[in-house]
Length: 345
Image (cartoon, rainbow, N blue to C red; front, side, top):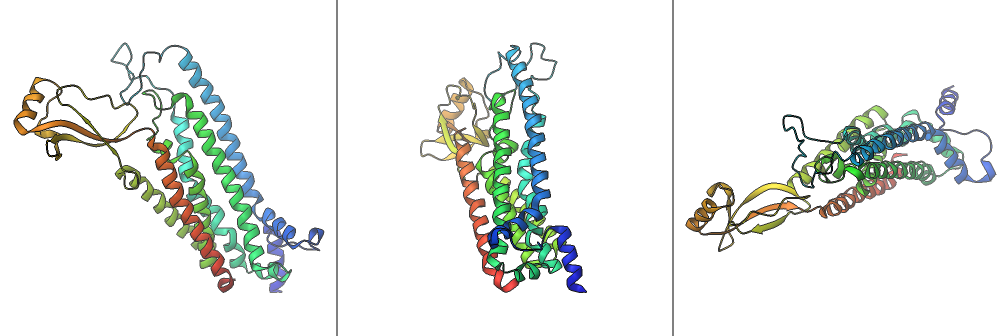
């Protein structure tokens, strides 16, 4: 009676296939089961991608129309706002709110994929016990895991890569302009590039391992939410503190204005330099470029000013650093899942 109930339930969830394996191939049968189990998630992912692409096409067209109107021709690069002729009005800005929403979705991908895709991937069969019937058909543990995880990983990589690509294409007209979105904005730095793919695969791997360990889908989902959420916040903190990517130090003479910040991402750390190379706080001589600053610097023995910032080229340094960290963790978690299969299944 129990086996019959399990069989009925597995048929509804796509966890078990009846009848002979197609073409006599265990691998094709295992992949068929993986497709049956995950097709709803694939459809949801495709729908999200289609909606994001449609909105991007419409919004980017509006951006280009606004730029071609000449309204933004006087705006320069750099972090300063693009002011209107009538300064009482708000600064000029492109409508980048929808773009930033997509960036937020991309940042949340490891959490969403880990919770709703990774945790149930093995956890559902483990909780219901239907994996025993799957294995009884002659499919090995390795095939059972590999077919499900490979299908999920390939779909995850494709979906996250395409979403990151849509974001980069959409951002193009507004990239690094006072009226647009700078590369160091959270949604641009963490919501685009290869790190989006690595983060999504990390979420999938974390959820899969926790689903295997807990044998309870809801418990695995809760733990995955904590792990992937904590990792996402940890990397954002590492970006702000420049923990993994050190800033550059820029030095200028105090008697002339320093070069514009431009597209650089300032750390907020700037001040004065002594002849021995010691860096002091800017409040020691809180004057703009000019005679007062020159006199103050001479009195205190300062020979130059400095500030710390990351240039726009560091975008790729941040990207590949995050990709290495998240991709490495995804590989480790996947290896741990493989090693634990025989003990847990």
